[in-house]
Image 1 (cartoon, helix red, strand yellow):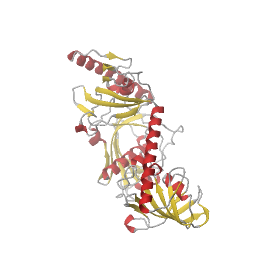
Image 2 (tube, one colour):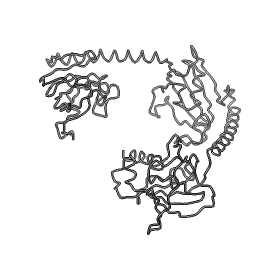
Image 3 (cartoon, one colour):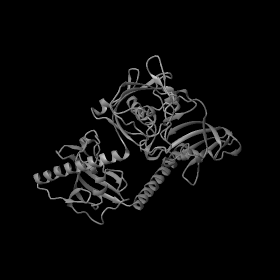
Length: 458
């Protein structure tokens, strides 16, 4: 859990703190030129924005980055001895690419990056307080008053046009390398595949039935993915990879690599095929754990099922319908066994009121305060706000009808008045449905809440 939080914070540091949006969008207005810096006793200079910096070594570059430029750098982010991000450890000797966008807040380190030239090494300091003010959630051990340090070495600066040209040249070169590797592989293995205009190769060993798959349809696929040297990196047809269920996705929506989006549309329900995907249609120059940069990928695929959006909706409706009938039967059996008289609403919610309360029923938009005990149909208590064992002992307050709670609460509490006490019997589709909630509420659980509406703010 701690490592997950740390990774999330590093992501924030490299986006919000540096001030660069992930999608590369920038503000139209150019940033103001930094005001003259004041020199501190430790040799750092401080800009009017609050950013502190020290140039350690001077490079020989002439161009300073401006908005929309693309830079490459080595970056080491730390607070004292606690390292938050180290590009050399994560990426070896590959510098981190970064598009320059307008600073997002006062003291944003990107302001300092725009003062550097290629070959410069510098240290930038940013108070933790500034990170907090910018809306970042701090790690528990961080203290206000500490400073985040960014150790930077600038490797390259390219304009948007230069970056595009460099990427195009790199892609064209890699495309040629991939094509040569594929032709050698086909010759060695006596394979005669078909080729599409994009450079994707494929063979079909079983035609399947019906029409070709279309963009927008949802497919279920059994697959095995391997590198060109035969090493399998993922499959749902081998239990050692711990996921044997078919892979389901909506095709043609960019939810998978381009080679899959294109290749699957060459097939029909029941088809079996091999897709030979050059790196440009796969993960390109990105390293992805078991898939090295610029890897050609070979996929064995079998289309287990194909469904339209209408068929999926129909299936979902039928599934919910069956679930409703089953849960209604379970609740009726529970009521009969425990001699409970409950009223049913149109949605399938059941409720009983043991104390009427006074005034009008609670209405959507009103802030209500509740005391409650929540349990499963088997009697196991999963939450309670009148028991210190469940941490919270204060009334639970929320705005009714604003989807701040499960649907069964939004509906059920609206049946109550100030001072009312009662019980809500909530089917899973008005609660947490198939996903459940943590380990306390299993999927498809009927929930029972003993509730008291303690206050309604008018």
